[in-house]
Length: 279
Image 1: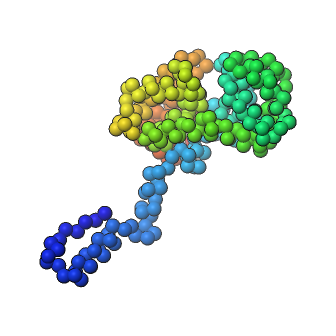
Image 2: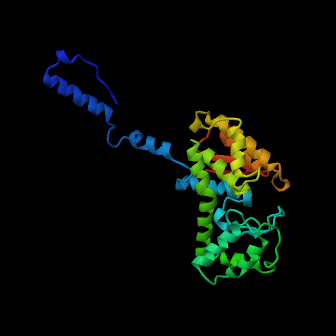
Image 3: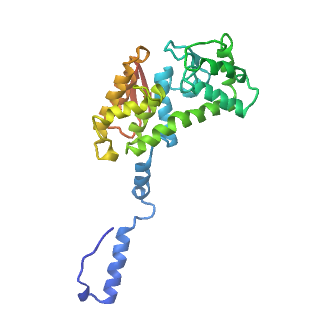
């Protein structure tokens, strides 16, 4: 707000009125001014902005599926040998970690009798293991068949948001992080989950908090994100299947070094030696 300092005793009533109008006009943004509308909106953008969320999905897909076409991954399924059984879908739902069970249960609730519903007893039995018991030989083919159903695709979207995306974005905003920091949280929770084990997302964050404060606690955002990514790399190296840390080293750290805290395109990065670009 603009303040005009005068001596009221020396002003006529009309002069005071004119000064009041000038102050009001100076304080108000001009109608149609781009900066008046765009600046607050830009500052408020988070990873949940549709355009930013699309970028997030492409970044994760580049690491999880070596492709930017994340929507092609609804049908993806394989055992990658990480001790989690089958890994499948747009976010890597696993038969051994419970999130695949929750997804198939949601799909069955919405569409009883679907092609995957008969696997629910087997998914309950193998939860917590890498076993395929009761799933082989037809589960992968039936998963790919289900992935043609828009209801199953929507169920994958909804479980992704409920379990991974929304909690990561909410915590990122609480910590005062901008889009890149929210994405760093999201990518971490996708890979590590948010359980109680030392390499879970919540404990990666605690490890970072021991080194630096996030902006919400008065810390420097870049310093804190470097601490978080250090903790993330440590967690990845605890497990052979995740020992390649390029999704951090040659992706997220590239954006951080460039000061691109809002993940504004163009974006160029590498994962597992492959190069990617978002224009």
